[in-house]
Image (tube, helix red, strand yellow):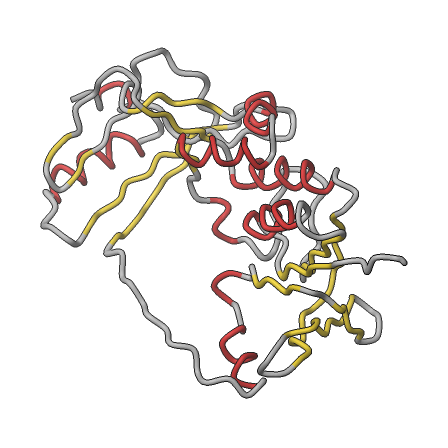
Length: 268
């Protein structure tokens, strides 16, 4: 007797979608990732990820979790140009309570562009023959209020078709239409809760900045496909939960944004 093949469909091919596909590949026979946009072959910008140009960092806990799911992925990121920053040894941070003290490493961050992070993870996930990507628009789920049995998609320049699945996972992010889809299936409206983080963020690029000496505050180095440093991005965040010393924040921002000339001065 032939066993039935089990399948899963992941909606969205960004970082969360790829990681979900990798996790599901261990519990089903085949995983299909449906992505609306064309995924680039390497660390390049793409239409559906406008926030990629902002500073991205992966804390050590996330790096360890990523390495457990995709063994060796942190090493691949480092080889491709990601930087490892000790916390708080080689960083400066101004909080509503004052400047953070700088001490010997207790945690670390991986700094790289979002394009590099996504491309490296995507290549590792798709190297698994159990995972494939289908480019197309998601039209909605197939099923009833009791169970979802698949999803309707419209591949580029092709007719609408249905992908049957034992599990459909929505990883489309902020633009998710899952709440509406569920009510269309006859389920009650999904309860939603919005949490305001109270953070305003700004950043600046320092083109052409090279490597830094130990002890000089680190920034974001958007390593390219060749693993080279093409510049540094510096960011400043203001938290509304407690009054911020606006003068100190403006001073820190000027020091990190004035074409890199004040970077060495920002050492409390």
